[in-house]
Each structure stands twice: as C-alpha cells, then as structure tokens.
Image (cartoon, rainbow, N blue to C red; front, side, top):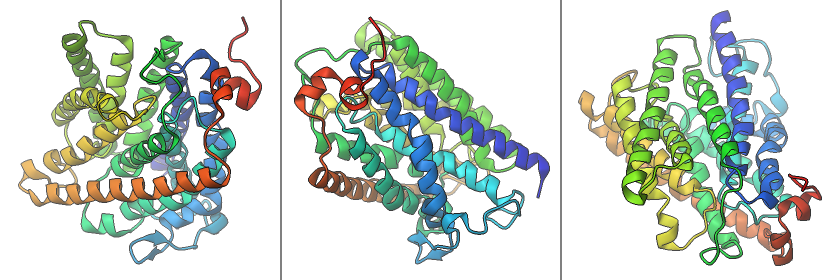
Length: 399
C-alpha cells in the first residue's frame, strides 16, 4: 500500500461526498419556494440510503468476481473481506479506501436523476425506486465499465463516469419524466427558480468537489491525477464561457443560471476523458459541451417532456459528447482518433448506445413497477401545496 495514494483517495472521496449536498443546493434553487426542502431532501437522503445499499450489496455486485461480463459476484456482500488490507481491485490502496471512494459515486448518481421529476414525486416512491435502481441499473453499469465487465473488456474508455454516472442518470431521468408526466401548469404558467444564488453556490460546490471526482479516479497521487485536475478545471471554464456567449447571442442576455449550467456541462463532458486528454483538448471538449448542452435543454420544448431541471440536456448530452470526445482526443494512457486509433471512436459509440438503451429500458420498467404498486406521483392538491408541506410537513421559509 502507498500512504500518499491512500491519503489522496480518502480526501477525494470526501470531496465527492460534498458534491451531493452541493447538488442539493444546485437543484433546490431552481425549483419554486414551496418545494425547496423536498428537492433538497431527495439528494441529501441518498447519503444515507445509497451508502447502505452499497455496503450491503451494491459494492459486491459492482466489483465482485465477474459473472459473464454482466454482474459482479457476492464476494463482498455485507463488505465481507473489505478492510484495511490491499486485497481489493487496486493494490496500492486499502480495500476500504477504494470501496468508500466508489460509494460516493453511487450516492450522487441517483441524486442526479431527481432533477427530472422535481416538484412531483412521492418521497416513499422515490426511496423504493432509488433502491431498486442502484441494484438493477447502477451496479451492472459500474461492473460493465470498471468492475471487469464486458464494456471494459471491449476497451471502452470512461475515466470517471461518463457512462456509469452521467448517461445512466440521464437515461433514467428521461424515463422518469415520461412516466410521471408534466408538472401542473407546465407550458402554461411560469415555473420560475426561486433562489438562483443558492444554485450558484451549489454549482461552485460541484466544481470544487469534481476535482475529487475526476482527479481521484486516477486512484493514485500521480501525474494522471494532476492532468485530470487541470483538464477538469479548464473544461468547466470553457463551457461556462461558451454557454453564456451562445445564450447571449440567442436570448440577448447572459444569465447567472446559464453560467452555472455551462460550468456543470463542462464538468460532465470532461468526466470520461479527464485522464486521457491534455489541457487544450479539455478546453475544446468543454467549449463544445457548453454549446451542445445549451441546445440540449431545448429538446424538452421540442419533444414536450418535462425534465424539470435539465438532467437530459446537461448530463445526457454532455455525457454522450464527453464519451465520444474521449474516443477522438485521447492521447494519454490510451489512444483515440487523433493519436492514430480511429477504432476507439467506434468502441465509444457502442458503449454509448448500450448505456442509453439498457439504462432507459430498465429505469422505465422500474418507474412503471413502482407506480403500479405504491404510486409515484403526489396528488394534484399536494402539488399545489408543494412537497415541503405535503411530504415533509415543513416549510423552507417562514413568512
């Protein structure tokens, strides 16, 4: 074991943990005041729920011995054998350090989905869906890419979660938006953010935590981690700028929400590529992501689905572009198109299609199953009152 690597990964795990409360603020500022606590709770409580699911079964299903390239075995059920020894997937870290770092990814991924069904899902149904999704969607995806499954064996490049985190959550978000239907008043009345400074703060926390997300995925305090850190920062910077410039041209004014959204879009897009591309490629990937994701949020208007907080437009479009861009720009630790390996682009395309198809189909079935058994959506009266009162008997603000 390496003490420096262990310290670095544990600090990175703490940074990724902090991203989930950051996401809670990012999302909560964009909903109406009557839903601020309900929206915050959907992200925050996953620090509890997802962590327990991960410890009991999710980690083993993700990183246990490979079963047919599809799922991990039960080697680590209830964290059996997962302790301070270097007997895990990487030999420079205590097994527990690797496990808890990956745990924080499992926490934030279902939290990302909540942006699509914001302001209208029952809390109990959310808990049931999230539990099933972590076991039946996230764990297989994690195994496919990082745990010795078929996608990793095929050679798909995903440094820190373009497929595992962003495309998977976006596919589930799209399924959720379609199954739950539109918010009351969607398209007929303004559904305005109630606290954009809260959203900006959340975006800043996400940007900060993302250094642990991406640089930490090197799993060592080394040059790859440093490169991933730099590429991550520059991609986010470029995307924030490109988003506000295209918004300025399209809408006449650059907005604070646009700046925050652009920064997150860049972070999403660089995630699969961070350890494989240089700083200048990071700028290109981020700049393109800002433009593409700005266009991506227009999809819900065109196709008439209510993705309340633009999970599909940012994480879906950004994650897809990032995965494809990895196949184009990879020059470090792997070779892509510009390094003379055009076949990598095709591998990335296969991984993109497989991720979207699997995650959307299974998520759609899970949403339908939960709806048929306990019901997904709050009543119309409760939607008028808001999640804070109807689901939690609290108020975010005292007037």
